[in-house]
Amino acid sequence: MDDDVDAAEPIARRSGRLLIRPPGQRRLATALRRPRLAARDRLLAAPRVSARSAVAALALLAGPGLTACSSPPPAPPRQPVVVETSVSTRYYPVRGTTTAAIFAAIDANGLVETSGQRAVGVTSAEWKLTSGDVDVRAVPCVFPSLTVMLHLVVMLPRHETPDDLPADLRGRWERFVARVAAHEQRHVDIYLEGAKAMKARLEATRTAVSCADLEKAIDAEWRAQQADIERAQAEFHAVDETTARSEREALQARLDGTRARLEPVDAEIRRLDTELADLRRQVDAGRADLVAQHNALAGRRGALAEEYNRLVADANGLIDALNWARW
Image (cartoon, rainbow, N blue to C red):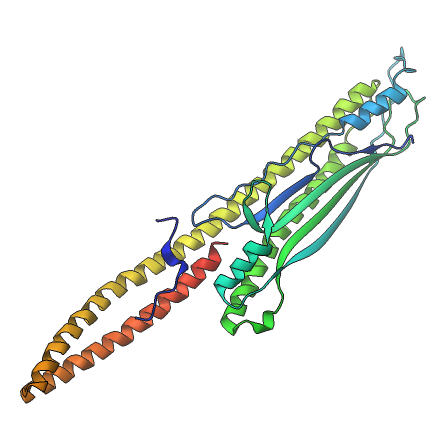
C-alpha cells in the first residue's frame, strides 16, 4: 500500500538534607505523534537518571569517621520512602472550520519534539529524589528517608471555537481529541505506576556498612526502575501504533474497493455520453425513430450517475476518516 496515499484531497463530484537532581536532561517526553500512513511511532529515548551524586555526597559526610564493626551489624530497617506526584494539563490553541485548516493550525501551533518530528499531544515527566537528615555517626551507613517526586505535564490541543464547526466535523474533532487525551492518559498511568514501583524498590534497599555500597544499591534500583518505565512506554507505543495502523489499513482497503467500483461506472458513463451525443445529432437531423432509443440510454445514464455520485460520497467520507486516522 502506498504510504503517501493521495487521499488527502476529496474526489470531485463527478543541610544534612540533600537534593538529588538526575544529571543531564531531566525532562522525559512521550508523545502521540502524527505519522504518515504505515510509519512507525518512535518513543523518545529517555535519559537515564541517577541518585549517585547525592549518595556520594552522603559518603563524604558519613564516610571518614566510619569503621567496620567486629560483630555483624543489627538487622537493618526498611527505608522509609514517600512518593509525591502531580499531574497538570496545558493546552495549545487550534483554529479552523475544515479538516485542512484544523491540521494547518496544529502544524502552526502544535508541538515539536527534539527530533524535529511534530506531535499532537505530549506528556513530559520530571523526576527528583530528595533525602532526609543524615546521621553521620550511624554505623552502618543509613539513609534515613527518601522522597520521590514526579511532576507530569500533559499538552493537548483545544479548539478555540468548537461551536463554529459543522456538525459532522465537530464530531470528528471531538473523537480525535478524546483519542489524543486517552493516549496521553495512558502515558500518565505508566509513569504513576512506575513511581509506585520505584517506592517499592527503594523501600527494599537496606542499610549497608559502607555508604559506597548504599550508594550503589540505591543507584541500581533507581536506574532499573527507570529502564522498566521506558520499556513500558515503548511497549504501549508499539501496541497503540499497531492498532492505529490496522484501523488505517482497514479504511484504505475500503477506499480502494470503492475506487475500484467507481472506475467501471465512470467508464460506462463516458461511453453512454458518446453514444447519446451521436443519437442526439441524428435525432436533430430528423431521425425521429431514434428518440425512444436516445431516451432509454439517457435514463440508463442517469441511473449510473446516481450510483457514481453515491460512490463518490462514500469515497470522500472514507478519505476524510483516513485523514483523521493518520494523526
